[in-house]
Length: 352
Ligand code: IPM
Ligand code: MN
Image 1: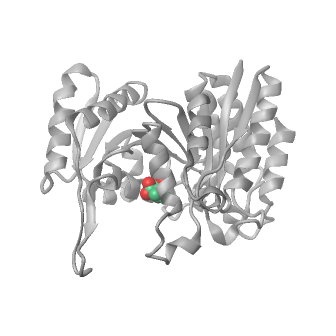
Image 2: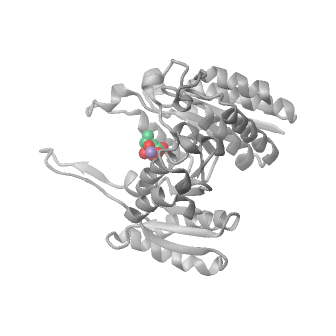
Image 3: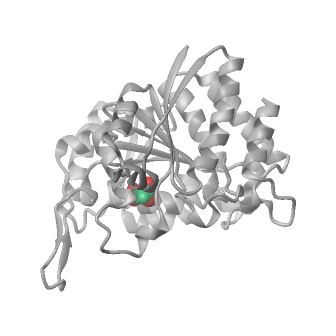
């Protein structure tokens, strides 16, 4: 198969972790007779520096023409403490999500048997955790009207959802549940928010189309609690943009390192695959970041974008093997030897 992949390394550790995923993808392609055509493009702070736009039109065109996008990370500290900055790297991410119509962010959380004791949560709480969040990604408070009064004394952000925005992600959530344990939790704040009441009403009305799926409705604060108490009691969760942003970071610590969790963003055009961690600027260029979340994102890409399940499983298997053999970066090494980012990539390649 011919696979056209747009490669967006982005900022911070993005290029280093993406490099390892590229090595792994190239070996998989060789092994299973595929031909990958990579096209690299600029996003984030590097794109602002080069052309003044964190998601340039040229990058968008490359993404639109590709079968999948593999993305590293976005963000640079020089913008974080500068409220006067007119363009910010993060705007590139939002623009990309919007222009590619990436309305659903799929973020799985699972445990690795060999890492269970690395988790800050006790073994008996997390064993068997295998859940997936579907976070709405192109609506809500991220994209609603916002502003600050002239005197700077008042600011507002608006949370807006339409029935059709809720329906399209809920449909995906029901379909995901049908392929899993058939349990769906709709996360909202329907005791307070009108948008949440619309979510609840819309999802409720869809239940008749999926009679086998058991749907529960829980308030976001309660979910935040249950997620660290009994994460293994969840299967599929669906929620709005901001709640999903917060809860998926919380969920990512269950596995023991944020450097392990992959994600997919899917929607109207090309799907995008990225690690859930950020650009980790303190580690940039040091060859110490954990590349596995990006490598596992590439596995999701093979399975979800190309329908190549065997290839995806081969990547997951070699990642598991590296963890079992203690071939890990410093975030997981403890008192043992910590491997470099590039050494992990080389080890994965050698063991494929
Ligand atoms: C994420 C990130 C982004 C978000 C930021 C960088 C804009 O935190 O992908 O979760 O808030 O969506
Ligand atoms: Mn986030």
